[in-house]
Length: 89
Image (spheres, rainbow, N blue to C red):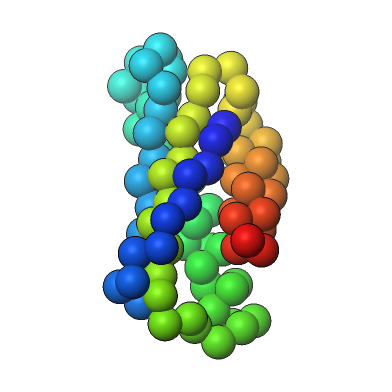
């Protein structure tokens, strides 16, 4: 799993989830995409309640690799760790 982030100057955050080329069939890719977006929505709610919103938003690109994310809890822990790390920069 890899997270790339950029400032977007829109005032809100956006995310795109990109499964790598050989990430299972379409059902598995879409399931991973939906899970990652739900984790991101929950993370956004938690962050907005903890700290004031910054003027600039961020664009996030999450790249998922096959075999690295097998359960929801593994995806959640890895993704949240990457998001926390990117916000500290």
